[in-house]
Image: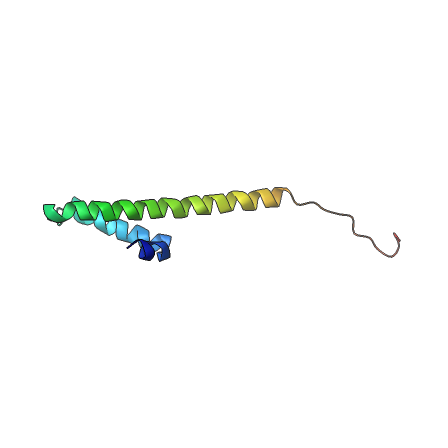
Amino acid sequence: MENKELKLSFETALSKLEAIVESMELGEVPLADLLAKFEEGNKLLKHCEARLKEAELKIEQLKKERDTVVFTKFETERDL
């Protein structure tokens, strides 16, 4: 399942996680399957956290790039 999880978008993983949590809260999961659902939910949660962290790092990188823009003087024929 880990290869499939790597390909999941954040939204898909979150949707699957929400479905697992809802079924567990409603008591729809037999006790025998509860541990497997919990493990699957934990993997999905880690996947979502990793995707959010990647997005956060990308935003920080873009902010730094924006803040370090250096303007140089544009030379015209008159300046030469």
